[in-house]
Image (spheres, rainbow, N blue to C red):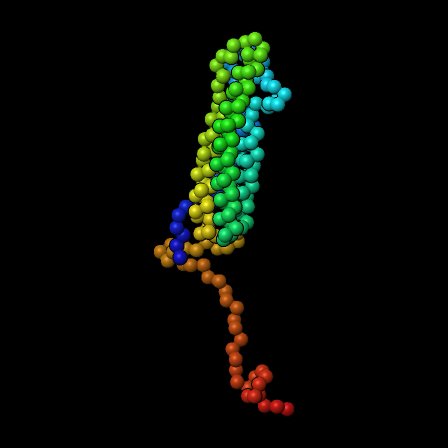
Length: 191
């Protein structure tokens, strides 16, 4: 039986890499105020002490764990884990947009409370990297959800089509052949 659809290795490697990139970018500063004095760190209120995307970071770690679990599972469990990864990637994207919007508003409030007019408050390249990597991770998790049941389990040989070459052969255990006169039963002469 020939494999159909994308192969597991490239999808898995790309998915795990994009999940790691999403987490790495989400841990960096996402929003900056261009009117702040040079060298000054962005100041936030006590509730928002970190200018990064914590929800996206947490969900990218969940997604990365899902990619790891895909290696050691098979069948329905693998499909469920891939679906969980797709949900985590979708939620990470949504939280990135929501968190960045809140960070932008908090940065504008902090600038106005310091007596400055908030200038150009914008997103850093880290924010855009988190969005692009998160969208890629989501797309690959959806591919994995559709194809996971067709991928081989860990340690299972890859099946090939007849045109690809000789199939993998497994040694079959020899079954004992029943011979008359041996074993128990009415055919065996008693002692």
